[in-house]
Image (cartoon, rainbow, N blue to C red; front, side, top):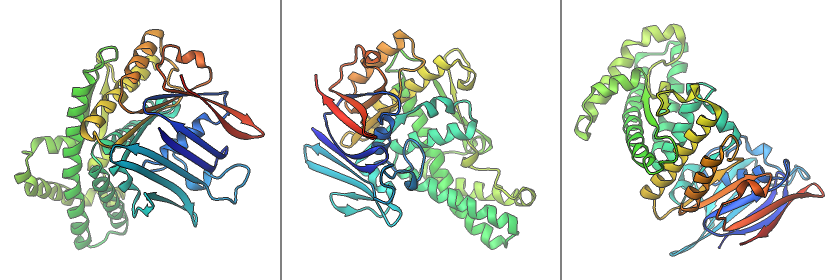
Length: 373
């Protein structure tokens, strides 16, 4: 059994949830606190959690001055792992077995968390930037070093954009483009490897669409033309630096960097050859679930000794009976912690859950009632 302790977080004053490996169903009325519980757990991943908000939004609604604390105690064959995240002086801190981590990205050494929310359901129609951001999150969980390369690249691009607006010296551009080129090659290589691995694991779920995944853009076209192995890294970086240098004059007028992995478009195509943005709502949901199930197999393949969580908020929406039953079967066979929310218990009919949690609002506090089969 694992344990999750929540203190002064959103609608929760103090709550303790002991839970097993496997499927946990969270049931309660709208506004009871189901999504708040998932959000609390999602903060054990780098970033802003499944709602994408800042620490100032996480205070307990009954005590805005109190600091919130979340503690996740996980049991493994090699001993307990205790992760804690809390607010200190307005900042979010994370500790592992009492040792404070210097950077959020470090937590990915022990735990990976992925989620689907109604906001992600709508993502497919929000533009290529939203899809690429989601793709980057998938890639990061599979290849934790990816986050470091992406962050370093993005910071260099931001500095280059400032340099374009101020028309800085060529020395500054050369230095920034050196950083961008080095990280761009790493980013491209990892993205291509992730696409390949997801394509393999997509084939394990025949009840869901076998998707075609690819990235495209000017940067990807150039990289595809270059020989790609470790010995050729200097040549690839040199070609990228050469390209950025040639487009500086044009980009001075725009004040922004128009070429690079940050302009990548991620294409997800249904077997009927329709891109996901053009598919029906039901097709989009089944395609998203196909991706997430493939991720669940890939993450266990790459990181078998880590703890893995899959958080599914109102996941049954837009699913027909056949896909719902196929999903329940697939989830019950996953060797990871799967938490799902729903208003009515009946929607989870057929789920082989290891625990049921009823969430109610009592005296304006979210309260947990735990039942095990």
